[in-house]
Amino acid sequence: MAIHQPVDFENNVSRALKDTQLIRNIQSAMDTLVLKRKTVFSDAAEIEKLRALGNSIKTNALGKLPELLQQLEEKCTANGIQVHWAETIPEANQLVLDIMKSHGATRLVKGKSMVSEEIELNAYLQAHGIEALETDLGEFIIQLNNETPAHIIVPAIHKNRDQISKIFHDNIPDAPYTENVDELNAIARQTLRKKFEKADVGLSGVNFAVAETGTLCLVENEGNGRMCTTAPPVHIALMGLEKVIEKLEELPPMLRLLIGSATGQLITTYVNMITSPRKPGEKDGPKEVHLVILDNGRSKIYADPQRRQTLYCIRCGTCLSHCPVYNRIGGHAYGYIYPGPIGKILNPQVEGLEAAGVLATASSLCNACEEVCPVRIPIPELIRRIRNESYSNDPDSAVAGHGYKRNWIESLTWKMWAVANTYPLLNAIGLRILGLLGAKLPKVGPLKHWTRYRKAPEFAPRSLHELVKQIGVDHE
Image 1 (spheres, rainbow, N blue to C red):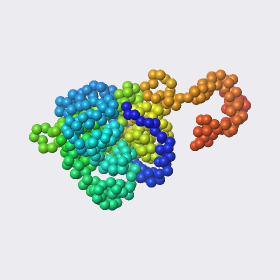
Image 2 (cartoon, rainbow, N blue to C red; image 1 turned 60 degrees about the vertical axis):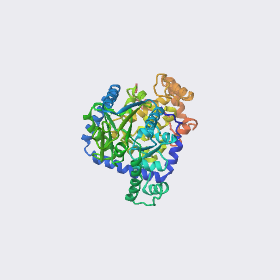
Image 3 (tube, rainbow, N blue to C red; image 1 turned 90 degrees about the vertical axis):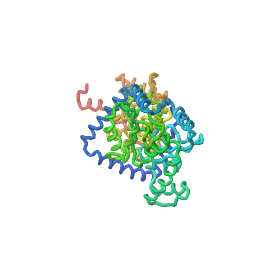
Image 4 (tube, rainbow, N blue to C red; image 1 turned 135 degrees about the vertical axis):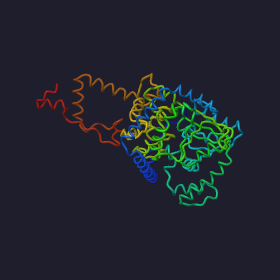
């Protein structure tokens, strides 16, 4: 499990809401992503059938997860892929470092990998004298600017062309200042090409791992991922243990859902199917392929039937694009690598409620995320679960940090409420007192915080029971 300090979410949000340029950048990009998804999934009946199939495939895979992971390891090993298991972030980082050291490697080129961001691999390797270079254009931009991704699919979504031009000019030697997109792409291409040629090891993520065949599937549009997995002599693939599916025939519908939801395409430019290292007679490909499978709290999530649905996520990012909260504050305000609706349920379960439970409060429960999720994760339901766990005193709760918001004043208040609503006479007395107070309730404690953004509750002089009794209606 990662170790993080509690997120200063309130201040993060305040800063984000004051950044008008950030809001404009995010909104412009979100509108485009939403429109592209809507276009590629124009047939409502078809997408609902596809979502149901995606949900079924993930339900099946997670229902058999231990067996499928074992099968994946056996098939990969038989194919010549070396499989490594990491329970924690330090173990995963050490495994990658050990593989690098075993080859005397000092240069790593990276394709897009959210797991590598999750374990903060770049900083770890750099601390051990290894150059780790992002080659996805968005990741490359934010690495130059010493930032983390602002979006699961589009890492630099919070930057506009002017800002990217300045980042390139300030951080790439001899790079001229230009706002021409083609010229910016050419600068990045020229810089990265030299790195591909000299890299000792290439690293990638894994979109899906097929247990039946031991196949690692990666999708991308820029070609950099394919360079990372074929040009260097060693390829390391990182994946969370939930990325496994059972059969190869399940891959096409999952790709259709992932790609359509993520980028609004029918298919990406490159779909990479990696089953083994370079075989005798083949002219390209790595001599070694390593697969590192990360747990980092996932097995604990898996143990709870309801929370297990969090692991259905295929990292398409469409819940972010449709979330009104994310659209207003961007990704960095969340304080974790996984922002938006999926981050609100994943981070608290992995990091603990004291560190990340506050993220679950950043939701209107509008259900937009659930309506577009390609695998039908009930995100609002899980957000409510996280919120409830924050106050729970159940000793059997599996969510780390449960009950961290619970306090004696609130507990006493709810007990008094229960008593007042159990005995009719007490209920009548309480309603009469509230009626006399009307809108003059003292704004102290929780009510003071509530009324910072809301109108204070106003109670009628007489209750509904009294009113219907007055006009002679039998309300028993």
